[in-house]
Amino acid sequence: MKKNLILLHIVLVLFGCSSISFTEDQVLSRSDHLTKAPEWAKESQDGYPCDYSSKDKAYISKNSQAKNICFVGFYEVPEKSNTNTNMITVAAEAQAKRNFAAAVKSKISGAFNQANQDYNLNSQEASYTLSILNEASVSGMIKAGTYWERVAVTDENGTKIVRRVYTINVLSREKFEEALTRKKLSDVTKAINQRTMSYAFGKSTDKY
Image (cartoon, rainbow, N blue to C red; front, side, top):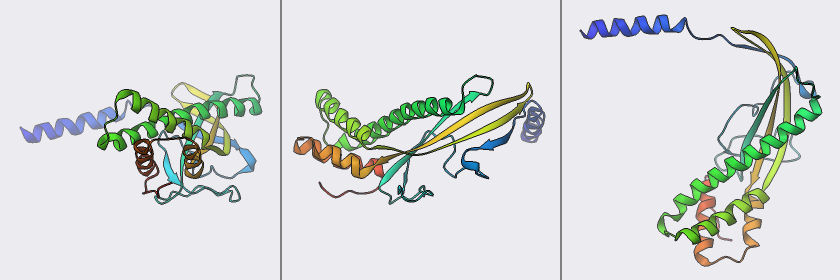
């Protein structure tokens, strides 16, 4: 009986493969005459600790001890739209900023919930403290770079040309902390914010 089930599973897997749609992407051109996409130019919803230096164009290097959190924004439009590359890039950057803000808010909210476990603030106090953290995160945002590519996408329905834009955005821990220090916070709120930063940035933080 067990052997029959194994054989049935193999048959289903083999025949199931035949129904998988085929998609192939061919990059036709890239920004700045690059020969390949930057390492960071990938669709990703998660933020990760990273190094960033405005003087270093190869500024992304995943590092668990870094002082920043990086997020990648992504936007795609069909080539047949009568929008030039500059306008597409502007629209993509605006969309990426909204996605970035939402992703940061989600990460900060999750870190805050963990940090608040020992303090158990009431809903009003928690809402106020979280609003301060979100405001500080917006103040700390930096757009670190943009990359676009023109791509021919082929699937079972044919080939279409699209333009894809990626932006790399950074939440600076330094700017984040500066924004928090400008607030007149209670000792409890300071303690929670301190622990929130520890969770959000993946490392312990010194008191400010």
